[in-house]
Image (cartoon, rainbow, N blue to C red; front, side):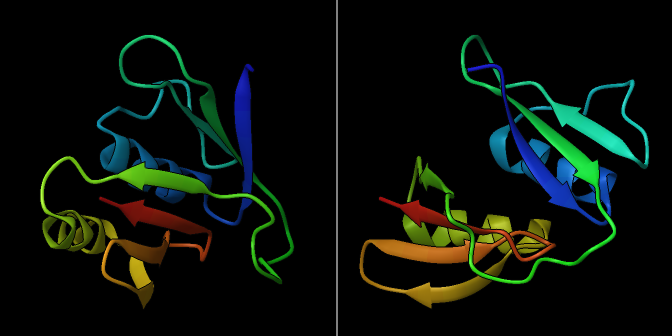
Length: 108
């Protein structure tokens, strides 16, 4: 797999969120129309963010599941500080959304 593509209205903002969330950086050739984040370390797909005119309209059909390295509550707080929002919580799983509303899960 080469990349995972996100349609969004602000590619740089969404790329900056995901780079910080995953411990990577936004590629230096990124622009306001398209941006990408290389996976930290080796392996994994590049995250590609492209501007589209229409807003997100429904729940994602696919999403990322992130594993909290430490306590779940601490990782959720870190992601909230980066711009994510909590959508639902359970004991060992939190459903969140990135700054443009793309859902993802954080689990223990």
